[in-house]
Length: 480
Image (cartoon, rainbow, N blue to C red; front, side, top):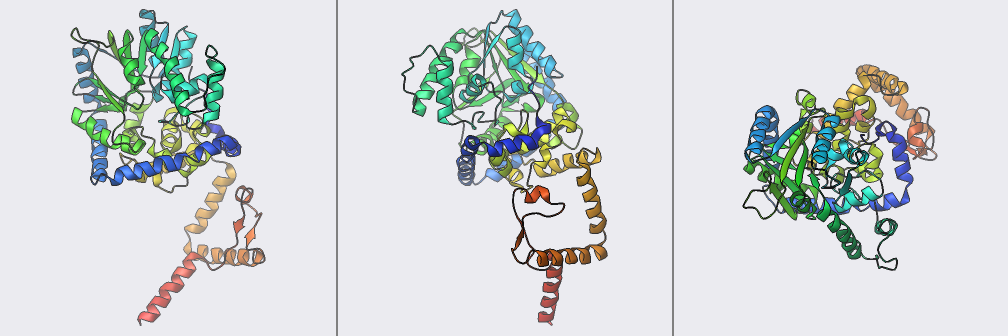
């Protein structure tokens, strides 16, 4: 029941994305929108980098003592009248949620945005059980009616434009007047609100993710900009929180520290429009709220990451800043990555969860420019972790044979300076001579992957090492 994995076809997916004119038009708006707002928000807070250090330390401490905080969280949830369920894998999580829904005779389930529910393929599973899931986040609603997956972890429908949304609404909302005006974003929003309002009122169960889970109080924290999360939590018979183990933080103070860097990193806001703290089911004195409160904690490979070199990836707070600043994501979008998590964070997390055999291509979808690490609010060294997967790919012979042998030849020369220096000088001189007339090459032996899409510039001088030695010798001569 999990979503199809096309990560092994990354290169083919990327080629299709680069040819998609509509997608390229939509992706052109990603950088200017997110990057400028994040920079302005960070500049307006002098202590922003200190907060990032604090956020990193909070997550590191929690991961080091995760077993203790899980026990504390479960204890506090039960004290508040709720229930905690542990799911080893996706199948366990689906079964737990289905059992709750069937016990309550649920026919309709409203859902807040949750990447974990995408990871376990929850919607398809519920439909197969005769339960109708309704995504209530606007972006998630759009991709649900298009039968697509999210292309971004905080903006699921960022790959769509207004024309496509209008066409989809006219296709799906057939009970509305055909001559209605849907030319303005406000009219599209009003129509979605009207359709979803009916779903909120009839839903039997509400399912949300969680940005944080607080061990001190047994509280789940949900951050949204639309308010759909609140309606999903409070109106139905039961509220199910679906989250992975690493969402735990020790205290309320820790959660508020992380919230200060989350919205600023994600959307450039000081705070999201709605930040909701939920603790247990409705109490006798409460005016509203669910009759039951359940937290489903998913492992699905996380505990294995705790003991290895990829532990730092579990600090991720799903802000999306890494993909907002990634030139590769800007070029190919999220669907090209072939599974739930796109961009630099997905290039590290996906091989951890589905195996390097299926996700080996993803860590190669990086220029290693370092922008992802530079903007990460919890300072995850994403380039280092992608290099880890590249090394594993090489060790397991998952890279193409010509690439492996080419690297071995290069390594042979590079570790023998006395041979590497004259060889590269000879190669540069030959290329400079051969390319002198045009100043570039449209084809080169062993470089077809490059010259298929762009020219290769002809060298104009000596090698860097030779120029550096000459400059150093000149400086010494001038000093004397």
